[in-house]
Length: 377
Ligand SMILES: Nc1ncnc2c1ncn2[C@@H]1O[C@H](COP(=O)(O)OS(=O)(=O)O)[C@@H](OP(=O)(O)O)[C@H]1O
Ligand SMILES: [Mg+2]
Ligand SMILES: [Mg+2]
Ligand SMILES: [Mg+2]
Image (cartoon, rainbow, N blue to C red; front, top):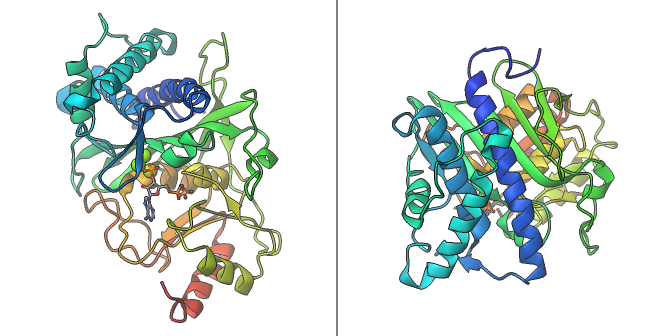
């Protein structure tokens, strides 16, 4: 049984979500190639100084348009990272034009994915509207989508790893997740190029979309389309599972690349105390979670500085994919993440720990308790 051809609960939503994310990944691949060649043209800064690019806006517009077209705009509510603030400024006409062009190029490919393309090309107003429509603030009742159009924008502009993440939340629970990883190498050893070396430059054999529905106990992965390949599915999807490794000595842990996003010194102490021997796999974006779901690493840890509030779009899609692939995702107190309190993961206890299995998970939770008070976090 595949995960979306059985007419089960959310199968239609999953089918549309996977197609939309797949299209978005191809859009990003093209833009990242251009961006790296043109040395970061079109990278803007938001109020908090974080980067945003035409890829972030273009993916948000595209996914928003596809979901509205498939389910009717009145039925679709979306929480997403980007807004139209920068893009609506009169000084941003060039930027907006680039986004409109990108969105139209991408949506023109919709029929190849079994989706409807716009009758005529979208104009700037319609593109801004599609982005701005993603203004839901979530909550504990009803149904809403959660979108991180480009997670790991820093990785994206550096020619490195990034992800496109889409989830559906119903009554506070993530019920489906789609995680597109346009640069995720099919061979896991190619992920491990951090610590000075540059990312692999060949685009062959790269890119996948992972997805899962709550309660199926299976997660899936399909390779991204290459060149003239036709989009055929579900045939091209294969099941993924977390790693069977439960011995810390053999396990690998992932963490953010940027020290500003998670304390490397705290996780180094934890790693030492539980006997993790492998050096950390530092990767931008939710590709870290993807590595756990696919069995390429066993542990993901993130301990942000005190006061930072994690956003739901940075985690929702990955949580259901890891859980359905057999793993666990909790805060450092062992509680499942709470997606029902708006755009933030309110009440998060210290940090996030995702593991392939419960033995590693228990070991880490205990170790955090033992070392927390002496940490400066
Ligand atoms: N100060 C701080 N602390 C913790 N987390 C932060 C912080 N600032 C940003 N963010 C969020 O981190 C997202 C990228 O996280 P990563 O875990 O992939 O970090 S890293 O890029 O590997 O360093 C990133 O997601 P994107 O904005 O989608 O790239 C942010 O939502
Ligand atoms: Mg993000
Ligand atoms: Mg983002
Ligand atoms: Mg961002």
